[in-house]
Length: 476
Image 1 (tube, rainbow, N blue to C red):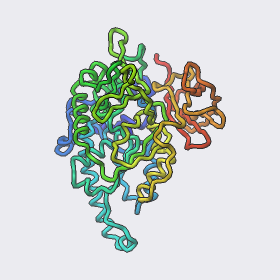
Image 2 (image 1 turned 45 degrees about the vertical axis):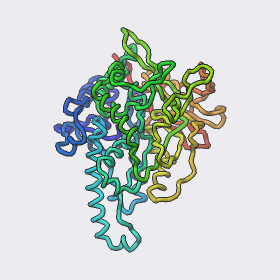
Image 3 (image 1 turned 135 degrees about the vertical axis):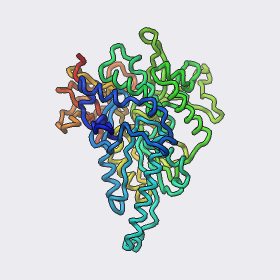
Image 4 (image 1 turned 90 degrees about the horizontal axis):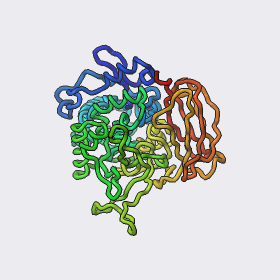
């Protein structure tokens, strides 16, 4: 979701510019309708990108202001990331942002990235060759260094798989919160209409859009995630269609997961930055909703699989053994790692990782080829976590905000402020959360206006954990 999109014919902004797209009664309807993928966009693949790139929607830049979607939640801009890379590059022109139409297939965008990266590398090498003083100062033959967040890591993998020569010219790939095995949140986004008794205006628009998008289907979990009680199954295209998605798009995406399991492509110089300790949906429990519609609920536990592919089971009951694998609130830990990379763990939410001080520090260190710094996390999932309403809030109704992983509220503060104006809010008082058995702490916040709010949990010992929450006016 991190690229600004516009209508190529009219220049009308469609995504990432005007918050009224998310909160408006009428204007958002037309924009969400325009974001739905048509038949040509759904069929676009790597060959399409190489021969005849699509032109209906244009990606104009990286996100420059906070954004938000139901279920997928908040996303911070990439301004701080670009600034951090400028600070360690030989010159600002060495850094090339790559906005892309995230609605479309990963393979399509990978082909576009491969071409853009080759063009950029060629031009930069020419620039370096024309500056003999840089060579005298020890500048080496330039190679590529990718820094990618979320789906961006999948796009980088696609680009390097499609172009082995580009992979050979790549020094390092840094992925931050990339769902290599997918995320169950993509299924929850497709299932929105089924799951909500009275879906709100924004929820209806998002589901209608998501059901048409190859990009959303490319985030489907490829691991065993559907809890059948005595067995845990992988999703099938029929499952996805029953839960609100598109059968054909799901078939293509799940086939890609199977191909990656078989091939095991290794990203060159891969370093993964992984968020942990955040309450994260990891598997799905299917139920029956109103009118017989299939409904899935996300569960905060995963299942281990032995080397032979068999589920780890409780020896006494034979029931699959459940455990909380933790994650960044969107991507659980096993999905954010490929098993062949160096990993840095941080306490942070998926959409706000790219402005997280520790993530920025690691990105700079990796770019400078310095040894990895000390980790904030350790991969165990123990640490401060933040949980906010994944469907947002409605003006006039209180939001329940929850802090996890804390022994007590002593020394911890939870605060809310406007993410659009910076208007500060007041610290909230944390109490033991009712109806929770994990010792979580919670606070209630009643917003005074529809807005995008930033929630911050500060323990005084770690980099603060933040998340964004959209509060909309009541539906008419």
